[in-house]
Length: 131
Image (cartoon, rainbow, N blue to C red; front, side, top):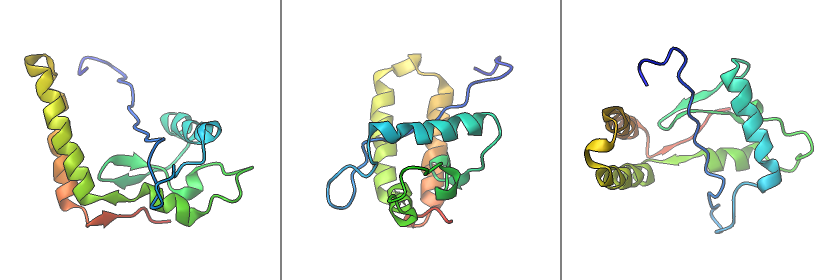
């Protein structure tokens, strides 16, 4: 990886996050293109992003909502919330997953996992995107 002149950017999306009522928070597969469009624009330097414990993520105004007028900013912000304790559990789950690979896992992966844990430790109980 370090030898790459232009390493690829990595994006993480959870299309299956549940809302407080147990339903899927994201409106559906046909709407995924909205996020994918933001990713392409982000890679090409056309979009801003908010820094979060998970990395960089879009704000409501960064997504093209044309044709999906009933998806409110408040709903978007709620699904973008990061619960510190849930994040810490995920970091611990990753540790167990990484152990499966033993010495075959690049050291940088564990470095990133630890950095993720540190960002979560410094985060508020619930990190919320502004805007």
